[in-house]
Image 1: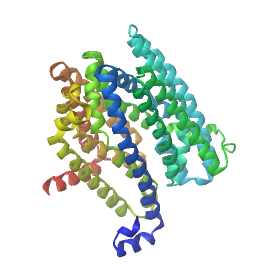
Image 2: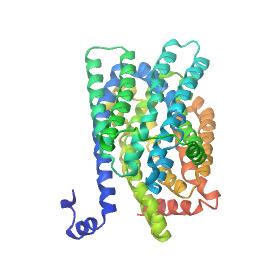
Image 3: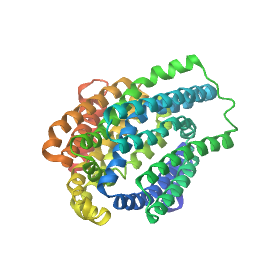
Image 4: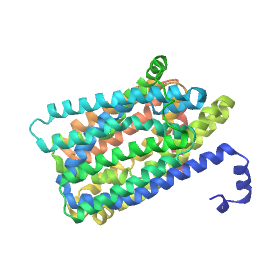
Length: 440
């Protein structure tokens, strides 16, 4: 990959091992997501066409419902575990072992809550309730993500890419086989669960092969208290984020019907397809940002400004053409049954700019040990989205839900930082990024 770059830039990269690791890691993550994006869009659209808006809506409603509890199963430990592994490599066995037990227990509890909640809210809808209960099984497997955290802390994401991409390809092929054999909706549900279980087993196996097993992991009660103390704001903020990212689909299902969820989900599937880019970049640079902060505050600020600039540029480059081609995109990909998703896509696609800014600024909050503020801003976003949906969905339907999402992202990921002295510096960095690009 370096051979295509100018010679001077190649030399600089070769002299900086940390930058080489970041570029390599980001390259693996990008390759993984691009492959999965291409296959996922093709197969996902085929599944949507095959099932139709009604059954596709039921499937997405159930997935969104389970996703609300997914963050609880991880306890918000991701960034905290990665941070501690980078800072305290000598204590990795206690960090990983403790985090694994905590997430295993949290996953079991989250699944129990899913079963109870869907039974209360959907007592008369046997099919939807059954699908939620089956999909909820993936929450128990969340503990395997501890292996992912280790690879992420070592900037070695190629191993997780191998695992997830291979299983994703097998699952996609299986879904195609199901379509060709005219399978029922439940077939697609079980394939999703098997895919989640397979990733968990293989990922832990690869970690054991690469590192030598998990027998050295140990649970440390004092470490557990420290992890939970640092992660609970991220847990709450993650739950709040999931609410304002997915509550629109649940509210649409309750207020309008599952067919509207299918229409809305078609637009969201296109709108969110590029979100892997800010996630991959953030996952790759996060360990280096922790180290840079120790060396130079000025360099630390400069790096964040660069990241915000890149996120705005990417967001606008994606949003502009999609805005003008939304109806054509939906018609070509999903067919006439989903044509009402076009206006939804026009609005929802602009949320990506603020989603990206929020992902990057999340690392700032972790580095500055301001996890509590991450929860507050996510809570504000969730409240705004719920209130907006209550007022907008009855009048504007699926488009109203998209407006609510855009408004909540704008307030939570951007405007919130203005009203706190500890985050105001981020607000001005985001403003400079937005102003500079739109000025150009």
